[in-house]
Image (cartoon, rainbow, N blue to C red):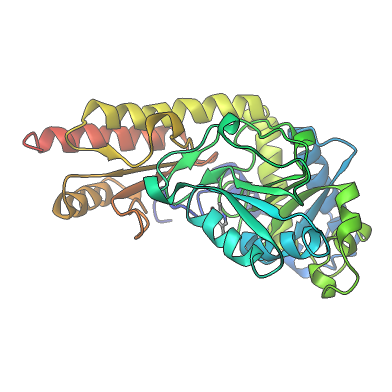
Length: 365
Ligand SMILES: *Cc1c(COP(=O)(O)O)cnc(C)c1O
């Protein structure tokens, strides 16, 4: 077998090794089933149990209250950019409010504009999405159709560390930091997250929606795009992405039993991020962070080196050491280290060692 690298990909991203081993062991024959999970009916007893177990684990991990339902959808976070306003904005009189703190928030806004009245409460373009506003700096109208924010801007590497608490429904794109810490779900009207960053493989998108908001979905919507259909049918309105739901279930099981829940995951994420940011801060002449320090993401660390030549040498040295996918997004440049839940501590330690060694190899920088 070829050796696994430390994979710093922004998404699809690293998965826990025990989860991959379990998939390998069960791929030909799911215990008690005589076939692969990919080969059985989504209406079979076995698959329904898998989907229910995944949903129950999410409910336990996030302490999802009775007022909310958990849906497994397809189409990624990008489809939610449209489904949210299609379901929650059509037919409303007050505009939706958007807080734009990076590339993904900007894309979400542009889709919402196609559906109804939208107001931009905040846009961090002038600081190149390197800073977040404080919640207290924003005045969010209580009668807004909803307010939309992005908890972690994956490309820029900035992340809110607390929940937003306001009277109108709060909609959050948690795609790149879903399950990284406990959150107070009761404060949210709708949470959505594609799985392939922090929770599983590409193909399934989790939506947690406050049940009363389902009443906004109009029957004139295309069937698949109506949240109410999925809620009424327990995410079996059509064939769910069975393999992706199965893996999401294994990841949540790993979070619960191996990691010990979201408080433990949060402490581990804080520890891992500190290892990377401390290495960055030890060599200010070599590494310049994109994010304002207080707004640094625990999931995606973004930084540049003094010039592109040093950046490509850094990436070459990383490759030699088995550290992969560290190249930054083209819009920010430089380096991006995505250190999601499944990135082991040894991976970030190897990265910090590389950062120290590389800076010491180039003392003139
Ligand atoms: C990756 C990402 C998306 C897009 O997800 P898709 O599944 O590719 O549609 C949206 N928002 C955030 C915050 C992301 O990180």
